[in-house]
Image 1: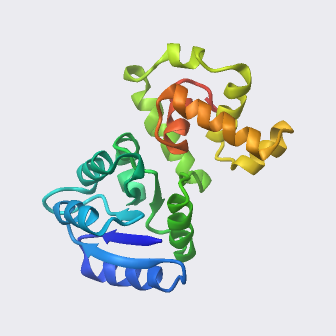
Image 2: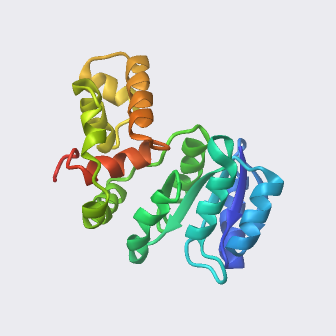
Length: 218
């Protein structure tokens, strides 16, 4: 897995870079200290995953994320946003711009390597539970301007069941156990849900579920 690391602090890049390089299945192919350089290197180096900081001088990580995702399309790099608790107001914006997930900077080191693997595999990072609460909170505050009731109506009863489980952060195998279905069937349902709702990945599906009152705890 080819990774591009973006952070404006050199010491942070050194530490995260050493951590990522320690994994036998991860190759750190480049580093950038701002959003403009990140966009350039993403185009030149074609990484699988871009680990992106939010606050940087010049172009911030959110703007860079949108540009990288738009330029790469479905086959382009996937972006993992690094954030902290005091930046939770940026979570929704990051997901809306096409980020595949985000990780809190105070998470254990092993979580970063796992997050890169998950996102490189084409999935979205939905855990830990505190992260889902951040999604819920931001989505709740943004709900008024983003409701699409007609899209909800396009889902079958089974697809709604699967979407609710996705919103809980469950994997396909966990949803299969919960609904007593095969994992392949769940994978098919998830694909149809994303297509019908015109969503990029599971992370955006979680936000959609919270916005439309389909997630538990609403």
